[in-house]
Image: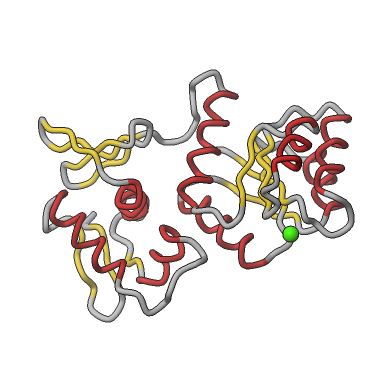
Length: 222
Ligand code: CA
């Protein structure tokens, strides 16, 4: 299982990233200051660090330079609202492996984390690469769906929604949970987008796969 250190002081973003990563099978730990980040990163055995540049205590780029200066080789992806090109260059010069600009969609972050972990393990990601239920197989590497003899491609958001269900077979997922995990922290809670997308999945993957649990949400038939 991959261990990820999330260095982020904004509770809303931290919990969004934490929940998303946990639901995809990662183990996460949270640091909310520059000092904590340094201590945990140097003391812990992490596979990857997500580093917010705007942490209390010290500039994130200094934290990064200090980690690299102490020989810490772990892949580091910077999370920041600072999207200026100079900042990106400075980030890479300080030893960052990748860069995600806020606001970001969870699926984008996840794709970058996976790419980074794959590189680091020589092409052998240690996480689950296929999920299946009811004769439908999700291939997490190619992002394709296999059913019977056929193969099917889903738009990115539909794939992430399907993956979220497949990670929690038999478990009721509320609309709010699904919005949070699939659409991120910028959504309208009154939106019916979840229902619309569940409709798309039913049409493509079979109408029986995802059942409605009245007043609670949806559930993948185990
Ligand atoms: Ca911050």
